[in-house]
Image (cartoon, rainbow, N blue to C red):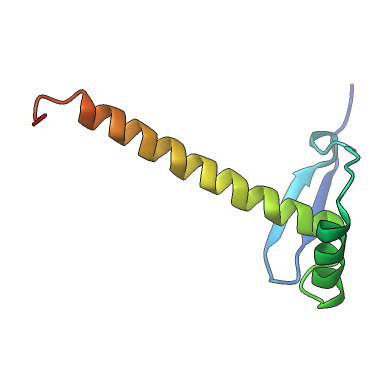
Length: 86
């Protein structure tokens, strides 16, 4: 039986995330010079400990934006399909 061990990631903005080790994947990415410089600047500022944390933060923002966009799209479709059309 495979045992999962929790891993705690603490970000410098005081948010703590608990993840199971087998839920994390080791995905390599290539950053453009622009994004690499930005990520390194964020790490050097002390806000993040690693470039990976910067990437995670960016993905969380993207995820939130996509959820909001989908909610707006759904609301628009519901409005277009409602009986109160002009």
